[in-house]
Amino acid sequence: MNLLHDPLIRGIFLDGTTRSLSLPQLYAALARDEIVDLPALRPHQRHALHALLCQLGALGCLAEAKGELPDDQQAWAAALRRLTLPYPDDEPWRLVTEAHQPAFLQAPVPDGLTNFKPVETPDALDMLVTAKNHDLKGARMSCPQPDDWLFALVTLQTMEGFLGAGNYGVSRMNGGFANRPAVGLAPASGRMGAHVMRDIRRLVTLRPRLLDAYPHYRDDGLALVWLRP
Image (cartoon, rainbow, N blue to C red; front, side, top):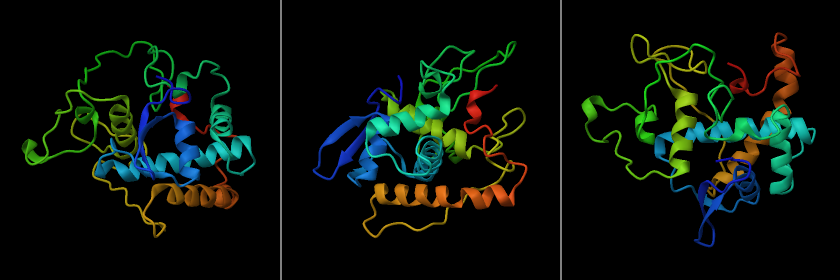
């Protein structure tokens, strides 16, 4: 399940059809503003996916095209692969790999780390917590598709906080009870393509200013933190 190659993400297009896309195909369709919706994307997952698409897209643009948006899916694939050149088999873009290798948003497992808990459904992996399982039930996706797992993983690794002793969240959250608000400009059409591309361009433009403001960051620093244990 290689996101750069395999059509794992379902998208609804302007003509009403639903097609399965690879990640580069999704970027190309977003650049053309053809995507109406992603049917597997749940409401609470929208900001997490938007943030990921914008950040990955900006990093790829800076790595491959000096800040220019790629023209088509092949160019998007090349730009994203530039971020993982030491991995010719695309392990960091796969949903599942050997434990000692990075997978998408999943760092390699250090030697000696065990005691993993099995997760049987995407909504059991997701970070959404409902009090006493009321209203929205957890672990109810009995027949999930790959993009159900993908969006749950993206949300988990973007917005998960602290849930008690031993249940630590992700480094992107600055505390156990932190929040992650999103404020930005969105196109009047409401479609995600123009929104994502606008924010990618903005991130590319702001990068030099951010590097000047935070000198402890390097221009050639680690872009994808899941490449390391």
